[in-house]
Length: 293
Image 1 (cartoon, rainbow, N blue to C red):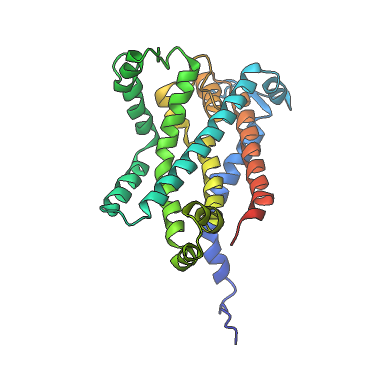
Image 2: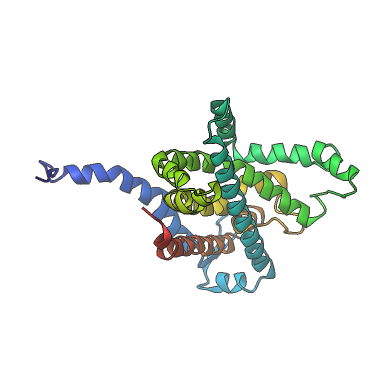
């Protein structure tokens, strides 16, 4: 017989939902509504004068070459960080899942970087790759490569990609390792008895059973690269040189706080929100079909 939970009072379910609904409304819907409203306004940085300009901010936005450059930088940055962080985390999780001497120590050390703040992660990598004082930068110069992220846009983009990837590997590693440990060992042992090679066991058994974890991490990593990497870019390159590392979220900050153009900044935040919502919807609509639950 199926057991069902019945609430004795009619107000209890609403009381249980109220805190989460309040958090969602206050910290998401209210700021999002304010951003949409402000994107139709033209006002000074001090809010002394305001004019309703309808879609003029959006027209100026999509006629700005710098904005399309930020879109291209964001695309390269997000794809690179997502692929590298997920790929390296899965490789490390597979190695840590083996019966190795001192495996708990390896797992602990690999998880530790997740506790580092994005700004601190960016500063650590900047210390190593600083053109004149960085240890790695000096070795690159010895090898004949003129490394300088303050002058070369490609070097700066590589540096922020490496910083953001290193910061996210620990989070991905934790979930990949948990997913690997949840796979029944009997399935892998049965495939080994049937003569399947380690590579075939991974592609036909391990990876399909790991797709729910991979789908979750893909969604989380997309949100991470679009929003949480702002601190890394601010600490390392400030969006430079010449906009080479200016992503969409950094451009929202730079135009609003640095440039004082609040209407344009609000319009950029609305477009960024729509892009992230669209990417998430595409993932749930098409990619989730290939997930094996």
